[in-house]
Image (cartoon, rainbow, N blue to C red; front, side):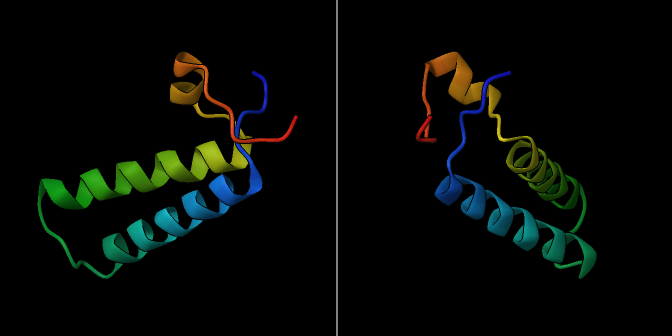
Amino acid sequence: MKKNLGSPDKIVRFIIALIALILFFTNSLSGWQMYAVLAVGAVMLITALINFCPLYAIFGMKTCKN
């Protein structure tokens, strides 16, 4: 897996993951919405941590400088 996420993209993903986790743990949502937000937050956090987004790879996108 080649790195395809740049720093600004990683920061945005961390912020989205943080918001999703806050919504989940404060019980702001209910039912399937709660788990959907948790899944989105988990995906955003994992992709930010490993510097790789599978969708970017599929579409040939890259936000990093290298």
